[in-house]
Picture 1 (cartoon, rainbow, N blue to C red):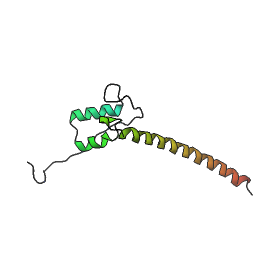
Picture 2: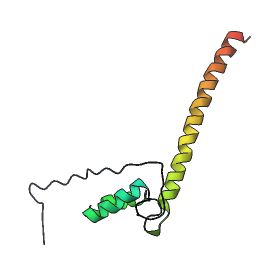
Picture 3: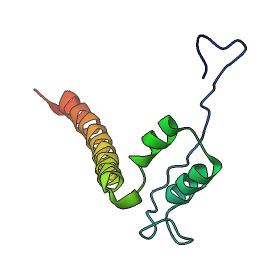
Picture 4: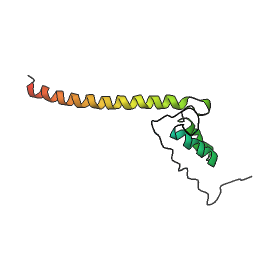
Length: 104
């Protein structure tokens, strides 16, 4: 049983999970999405629970929960809306220039 502060003990949570838009199939098999495969490999490596807990929210249909699918879908729609807003902003800038040139 450890008590007190451990000397020379430094924990760096420096893990990388790649986020891709490809969802793959349900589960963690060879045809599953990339993040699902990385999540399962991290579980087998014995990664600390705080990291796995965060990644579990982004895994598509991981362990029977559907949080990740909804987060990823919301992110995809946000991505589309941001690019559409950027295109509309450029159009407004171009049209406003003509208002300045030809306006009263």
